[in-house]
Amino acid sequence: MNISKPVVLIGFKASGKSTIGRMLAARLNLEYTDTDAIIEGLYTIFEGEQLNCREIYKKRGGDYFRKLELEAVKESLKNNQYSVVSFGGGSLVNAESAGVDFSGAVFVYLKVEKEELFQRIMRDGVPAFFDPANPSASFEKQFAERAPVYERHAHITVENTSCPVEEAVENVITELGKIRTALGAGVQLEPGE
View 1: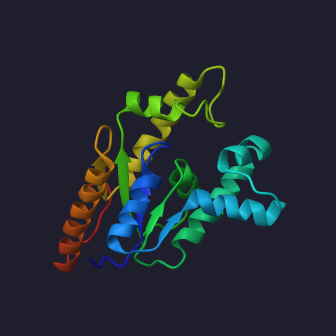
View 2: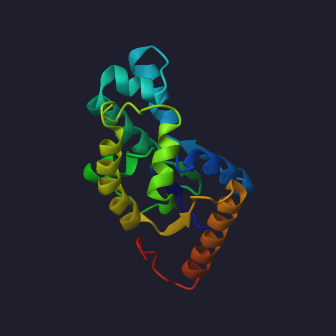
View 3: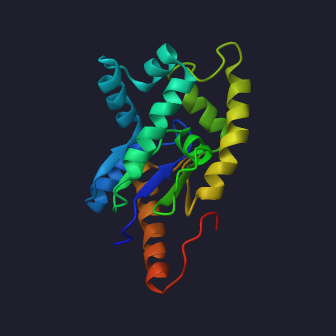
């Protein structure tokens, strides 16, 4: 399968991007990149200490985190090669507002029903980017802001609410095959269709 563009998994925190991304890359024998890992690496370079994304957000705040996130997105897409990339939940929204050119990517939206998504997110405690006094309201606001952005950019949408991981990977591979066939026939790739 040769699309010759990065396959970028998008969706909310806990939608399965990292797990599916690693498995998809292994199945397709492609390089795998996770923007969260890039963020953590950049933080270590700039600040001289190792923290995970949650800790970075708590320690340095949202503005600082989003700057690292934007750099991570640019880094993950810079070679514009066929690979698998998992964006963090806010990466697409942040990069879109900064005017990043996404024309060299195929976006796969891992969609999870809202109620299930909130339960998954809360399993590890209240995320740093939610108001601890009202995480439900924070989630609702974030969902309303981000879901339309994911849908607008998605070339492929894979329902991942109750789907086993292996099945989700197979669904992505099947849809990528359809895109490859369409591109081979001269069809222009348009998101949101």
